[in-house]
Length: 634
Image (tube, rainbow, N blue to C red; front, side, top):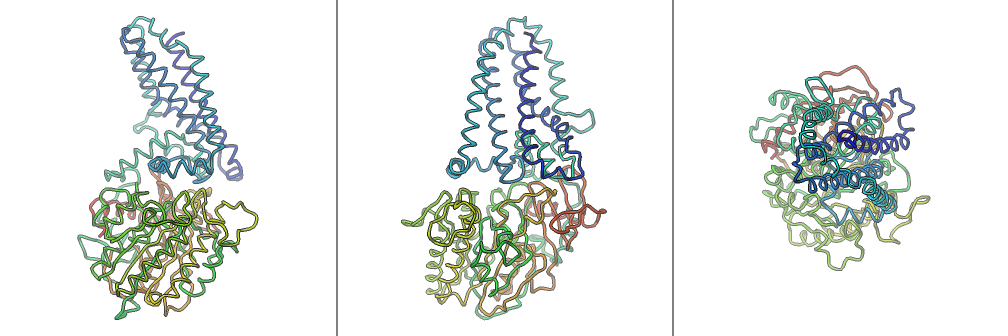
């Protein structure tokens, strides 16, 4: 068998594995796009292009070894190639299998998030065995069977290729290398093809099916590293920083003359007091608005939050920064929109001297705490909080003999009760404080103590809805306990979600799935509903306003009591950005021209371009990167 025949057979075999994976996704999600006016069959043609790009990359090593290795190393070289293909086949089968549950959870193919979670094996493997054991088992069986069959069929085939004279093998190097280069470029034009070529449709699900999973992961890692070097502008577009900064400040209605912190300005409190209040933010993991009746969601899942919503300031149309906890934390703790690439909690230049409510309040004599039932090293929360002004972290290791510990840590109610005890002690010592409590319940595999509340009817015990109802129970228990204490009257309480439980939908950016609940409770605050668009930075600015302090800060939002408050939100969905102003939404994807949509009845409807809004969206992206790269968000 000739060298070309052998390589071609394995090349086609790997392409077939990718095709089966794409066909499976196509069948599973056909209803999501079959009614749209898109040519979804082209997914297989454009998808083949993505598969060829990645498969050609995989064949670089075998071609080098089989054509250029000297004959005296034939045993070693043949063995290397033989086991290389075994690893490749196993990895491809694993990734195609892993795509299914990942797609079901996040509505996208595996991306950088897939890689990031591998940094936390304890949590990830606990989740795998709890939620995906059947899928994990099937994947393992498929891998073992495929590798066994591969070794049986392959035998000494690669060793036999070295029976050819060296010159006959070496002469194939140049034509094969050119073919692989052409496959990797997948273009004869000035620029090679890339993952943006898979996004040929206006239906996001079709675009995701068109992609190739390992290429998607590899590209996400590459893009993340590139963003870390501050080189994102080639992907989104180019704009002078000075213009971008002015556009963003104008759109946000921020007036600042500071050079070291271009968004920093003095904001005077609308509730000025000689006795400023404490601040407690109870951040809810993955609590989407669709579960909260008070903001238009399903009835019966969050009775405590619904009841409390009539006693404070309810944000009816609030939107998260992104789809990850680290984006939500940056929003409610730093008032920062989502920086392109990796979130600021995990990036080098934001580990110190990055603005947070702790760095803001520390000079005013406040003690700041972060309370979390899990291990705070997750997502680098511990390093980021301590590096940016927080005085103390109370996480899982600091809970003695907790009554219930799930996969992700100590249950919410115990964390809330611990917080209550800490606040009592601080108040008794006449110590002002600000704290972030972060819940863990609504995280697969949805662990929570039994017998605490009435389960939601018609769903499994360990389900999203029951996890949210337990988190809601903890909210009610915490507020009730706090009301019995003296510190309650002197404290502003914020209850807000970090992001939605699952951000899915067919639109290029599923805007409705960024909708989250937000509530502020404070003695003397007239119960009211704010039904204009708001962001997590707006929530932080409003809470600080209610504390009664005149403050200078760079928060990318305004108190709802300020005339400067704008009716907009900035959302990041993977590497795609959307800027919404009223019901007009500009969307910008990597390597693609901006688009403008009208947000109507929960969906994006294409319309003529709003050039100014599209340029402002690019300005937000450029400015966010500029502020991070130059450490100017402080």
